[in-house]
Length: 487
Image 1 (cartoon, rainbow, N blue to C red):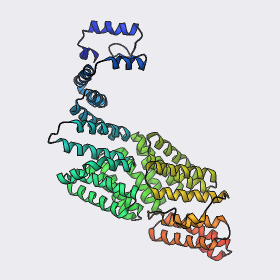
Image 2 (image 1 turned 90 degrees about the horizontal axis):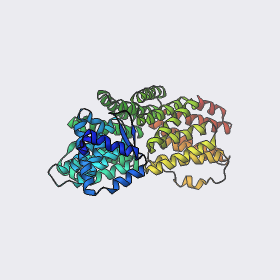
Image 3 (image 1 turned 180 degrees about the vertical axis):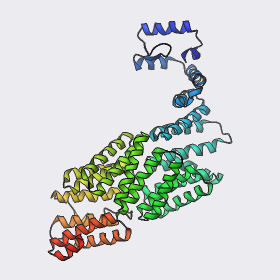
């Protein structure tokens, strides 16, 4: 590569490299002719690089990029990232955009969304510097919608919306339907997870799904159907949700996308099977997700699979295994900054430690969960549920700073239907355990929890409600009614 860029003969090249090695400016690694040369100190490299005139520097980057294209054309896919950097530095924005797109696609296939986001941001900057040609606006729509998709797969909903905002009107005016489907999916996810406006979210997601089906576009169908399935399940429309989640799994199977199959099986395990109380099926599905994530080898699908399988263990009452798997999932989430799923992981650890009576640990994990959701600026309802869980732990620890007025003032408001009975049970527990003066109010809340979870089909939670009501009735010495609820 150096020989081709400099135009030196082999003899001159080796002589110059030897001089640099002898002066200890360079190290040689590997065996000639497969040698790699590196600077002994990064600072030396910076000084040398900064000493080159800007015009000469740009020319060198262009020549290096061209040489790599020529020398490695048989395995060019291994060099997309390096090529993008050289052509960006040479201000060849056309080639810079091309290789950023290819590097981003490659990163997406490996479920490395952080890298995909980085390359796509650079791609947009390259495209926006190009002279206004006929195809440039369309390419900008492509790039910004891709950035939005990468962002929202990492659950960065606000950033995803910001990525597509500049192109929404342009996509509508130009009738670019394939990208409109993806834009509407991003807007639907934003409306659901950030603004928690379900009607608006479902409208966007259903429109996206309709356009995707009309075009028979697999990529758009994958996103629109998957997120529609999640939103419907969180709204307790479980059978409709499962239809869309299974459709998304089928799309990934057909595309032989292992990480995609794993991730969607994890979502089906939690959003459908666990929430609707089909615990054994959820456990089996999340186990399959883990097996596929390990086969895929990427951290993204492992983060989601280990968290979901841990939650499945919790649903079966195996607290030790649940903790082990969720902690592993949380560790993977931290490595790739997957804030939302880490928030879910920490929330469920808070639940587990509460159930086994380790209230200090429960408080710590609820606190982490709240912090993560707030950092991600999403799921305020789930953060509020975790805050209510935090109040439960304080009551169990006999802490004195519990203010019941804030509970009655709807400070912990939730907009998700799955939380209706959940929140009511938390309130019942707080009132039940705080003292003996609130048994009537506690009973009122547990009755509301039972009614809500019956209506919404939240069977596991309904079981928890009856168990809590039985404990309350036992406290009131109503043994026959307590027994009926336990049954």
